[in-house]
Image (cartoon, rainbow over all chains, first blue to last red; front, side):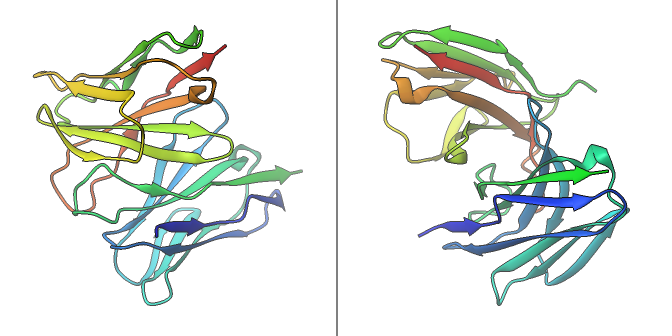
Amino acid sequence: GQNIDQPTEMTATEGAIVQINCTYQTSGFNGLFWYQQHAGEAPTFLSYNVLDGLEEKGRFSSFLSRSKGYSYLLLKELQMKDSASYLCAVRDGSGNTGKLIFGQGTTLQVKP
Amino acid sequence: KAGVTQTPRYLIKTRGQQVTLSCSPISGHRSVSWYQQTPGQGLQFLFEYFSETQRNKGNFPGRFSGRQFSNSRSEMNVSTLELGDSALYLCASSLARDRGEKLFFGSGTQLSVL
């Protein structure tokens, strides 16, 4: 079956670093996405990994290991505005399909 | 460039009624996907339309249907509403051209079924 797991909640301190893990078991794999969703707002794209390794984009980095079915999102220099839900999603079908399989999301609370 | 627009933003219906939700994708985007988001289940894929054809479908009952028009705008219909259909319905569009195409989401329609 299709399964994507991520922690439900995490708490971190402003200025710190936090790592949000995601493990997946899907019938196919054509890339892994991370989205950020603030309460009452649309999910917004953060990162995309299709090859093993680390992708860095400013304060955000995402890592992928296809052999382990594992990814993480690393947030550095946390700010209060980073308090949001972080969604891990896998594209298991053809490369450009709009069908993604999402995890339940990790709610991150950043405290002063 | 305007983002993905969904209307209405909020909707209240009663059991047994039907509802139609609308989504206008980003200009030039030919793929429109629909997702249901609930606190217990997260985001679940409903269906995807590309060039007016449904090309992917999730595991939802036949009460959930959709269509796409020639201008790529899409509508989603839910008939015979049930209490469990209360959710945030999100629409996402993409160019659907390359492997790494990301989805752009609208703010959603919050549906409450009483």
